[in-house]
Amino acid sequence: MAADLHYEISQFLYKEVYLLDHRQYREWLDLLADDVEYIMPLRVTVENKHETNLSKEMTYFTDYKKDLTMKVERLYTKSAWVENPAPRQRHFISNIVIEPTEVEGEYNVKSYFLFKRSRASEPNTEELFGEREDIIRREEDGWKLAKRTIHPDQAVLTVMNLSMFL
Image (cartoon, rainbow, N blue to C red; front, side, top):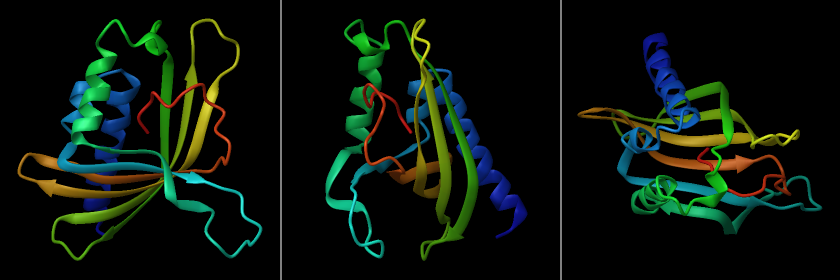
């Protein structure tokens, strides 16, 4: 992988989490392709260590651009009680690995994530961590996220809700 391409895609991912951490959700939507798929399958505990422990039948969510847009717009209303007061959040992205797909200008991008969130004056923080598998493509107006599959490492999520974007 060429260093300049790795740098460009890494900067795209860093810009994405900056927008999320600063609650610039409408600007974040602009980074998504019109045909984006945004999926988080359930992780289950299995006895056999050689089988996958990600469910193929169940997800926490399977969203598309329209779904994500509705979720974002809801955050700008008074009915998003879970976001009032707004939680403080940070996304940490690391271990970025990029490989080309068979489609020119499109790349498989794997990365690790750590999401931390604190609410009001609560002393405890919430966290999610795991791996993301993305398809990122170059379009006329720049890089776009075309697909994200989020694999949480926890089989039991310890967050109050899934009102965040990962």
